[in-house]
Image: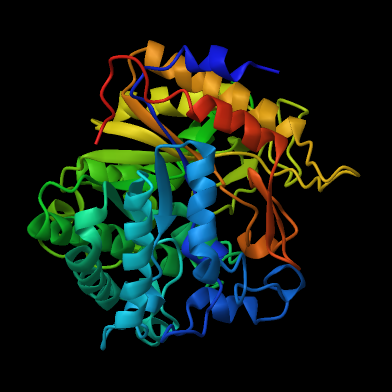
Length: 459
């Protein structure tokens, strides 16, 4: 076991340690105080979509227990909390009337963070699109980008003064590709054309959101969070290397290209351009507005090989075998080296600003032992190994400014429901009792070392 204080010595004294959650995964209260359904509420109610039709109706009951949860964050000794704001609470139909009670909830939350001296890192979209917007095509409709812009303006005008940083989107790869091509996330589409429309209008919404934030509060640091994949060819063959390049363009370049270069990858456009929506004059300039920071969510590596089927559709790849036998309980390969690989690759390919690890963590499902303690040593080992790589990134000169553990507590894990647990804190969903796990105590010991010395804490 890596000593937390020893590891702390490898980070600058003003490094920011935090914890992360997301609205639909923890809040519950899906029908209270004016909130209306999101696409995830509908998806959960469809047979065969979510494990045992689990849903977000109660989740971790954070909507009612937020003060207790903020006290828990304070106990962890972390400097920041990354959370998301639920669009269906703020503008329940996506467009139309603003719901003051929804804004009131986040008012209380932000005031509570400030009272406890915890920085607020807010995410404006973490997948819970108001269901009503599906009538306009959801993310496949251009109008949704403008509905999002109005939502952003509404939130930042009311709440932006107490935010320390804001992200427009969390993991558009998931809300675009998992949701519109693979069909495993809401709204459950399986269409390349829908995927490409959702990608462009999500990218456009991001740019419109950045413009809205800057117009209201130019000093509020604005960024976006990506789960960029470390894509490794299964072999050194020319076919597999080319497949990895295509996969990188499709999974990473579809978002990084427009945001940081103002263009989609050439081969992607060559192969799929006939299915893409019309890119209107000015779209790419809006999408590529300069950012103050970006966030990386990392859990595992993607290994790909060329699809031998001559009829395979671009990007024409198949999953390659894992290189490491160690997996988490959700089946994801453990590969800290991929963590460094993807960051080096991205900084080599794009002109990127400073960054944060906005999510990193591991799924292990062990519960309380006879003494009530949760011994999740494998999760602790995962954190230690990946945080060691983060220290290496800083030593190499990469501009990493902070790290947010996923997650503060066990929660609704999307299509996996409540059977998969990522928390530093165990949640008994029957009683809603929170119990800090062994990994949580270790992370607390690490976080409490910061800020330290003569370094000033970063805003």
